[in-house]
Length: 164
Image (tube, rainbow, N blue to C red; front, side, top):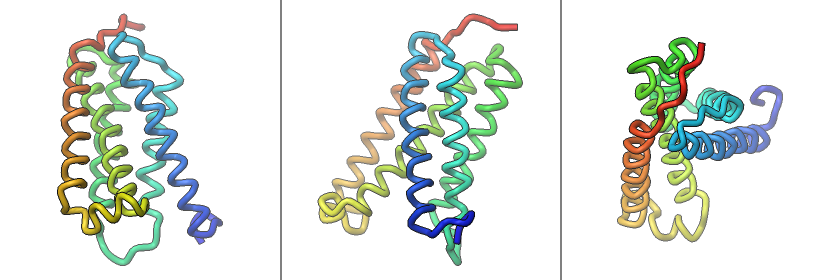
């Protein structure tokens, strides 16, 4: 049992956290283009995304998996984003560091969503059973290019008013 839950229940909780993180992250990313901070949405995004990565390590596994590597990377970029946002209050270079790290954390969550979609949804699993087939590669490449463009745009546009 994981945190007193059965594995299927724990999986549902982990998935819900991930989807909340993605939804909140999209709201935060869109707000960056208008230089809005959205403190509550940002907190929800950061907390649920951290919890998604942390709970990902709690599934029973006997060896290191690619999902663990993604989880470690996500936690590192989230730690930097949280520090940039709350400790350094987006001052000077911390503004773009925050944007890059926040967008990267969101991208990693969406990257895993695409992986899981190709594993769990029968119609996608038939298209790319080993996740090395062109439909999977194209989907992941499209997500990467989209997030790279969004990150660049957000880094340019996100210039919130200074706070004390």
